Image (cartoon, rainbow, N blue to C red; front, side):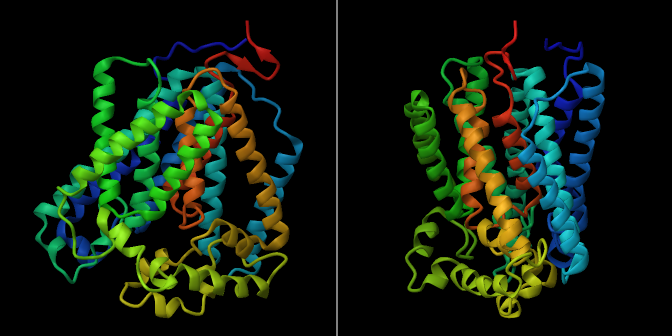
Length: 446
């Protein structure tokens, strides 16, 4: 029988709340500490301290998870032996490649650490759903939303009160509070956004004041997300809505209604935000950039990058080159990174902007095949479990999961610290016991 501890907020729940609030902490510390110095010394989001903040938050979560796990005496479901074997072999292969063949072992080791922490985060979420149900899901979802909403005031401060930000020679898309890179920021926004949309679309639900606050948060997230000009993110949200609607047709109308109404209002609000001259920003620029005269311009160099990655893959087709090695292997890295400082260029082209090509490049056809088998099994199982669930509290996680997975075909969702951990979190929630029917491995608990 599932038992409950007496703590109002169990340690593992507090750990997930902290993880959700990391973006806000980074953004506010960044604005308070760096001011206009960010334009000379780089940016907190791309610097070591920004990366370490995510790692330490995930480690604190694991500590809380262990404390909570020991205090309750609960045990997990039995996970498929095939899943255990595939995960173990992939981690071993990634580690060996990182030490033996990688041109940059430090980058490989850092990426491997993030993956391990994401798996551990998923395990903690799986456990927390099974033990605490909605007592875990609600505060975790709210923390994810709040963490991104609280990055907006520092962003507006930068845009309106830091004169250097309006200098046409400043590449604003690399100095956003808490993140640095615009597309990394957009990925965090889209994850929080779809969680909020799914919560608003739930039938019945919480108090009216909470829904009003949630509505305001979703509108704000839409406005900044569309202002950021994230074409791939918007496309991924649309595809994820289609898939979730097919899986849970009972809430499809409400889901689309909330998404379209709040999205339209958010688009209107996005025009109120000052727009840098850089063509990367702006709702209307999303369409203008998609109507350019060449595939390279439309895809921001991705077509050329993907074509070159195939030849790099064939240089070591069976076992790959190791994690996060693209910037060390791509012949056009120097050309593509012109105009950026070394750290920003390394961050931008650290990955091939496609999860399939990235897996083949890192792990080869042998490891890549194992990765695809494991991933497809996990996604299908997650969709099946949420699709056959009684309630709707895991729908936000499924929508977030599918949005990030869809976007991983166009950008580095599988590399960015926040989204790697969110993928683990969303997978853990979707695969966990159904909190609305107190389910365990053998059925309904009485």
